[in-house]
Length: 42
Image 1 (tube, one colour):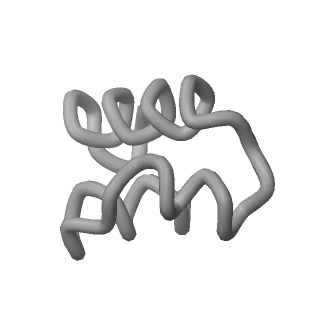
Image 2 (cartoon, one colour):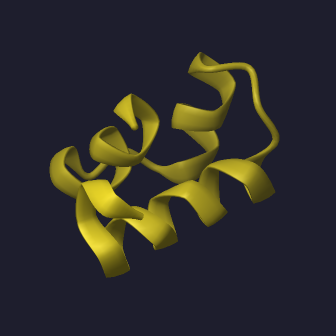
């Protein structure tokens, strides 16, 4: 959830957030997309 909020709410680049949380950029993008579409329920 924190990663998705950084990307969606604070405008962090997906790659930077992925690096910070030690996940692939694909995973980070998927999480951010879900958060963008469904909010915290996603």
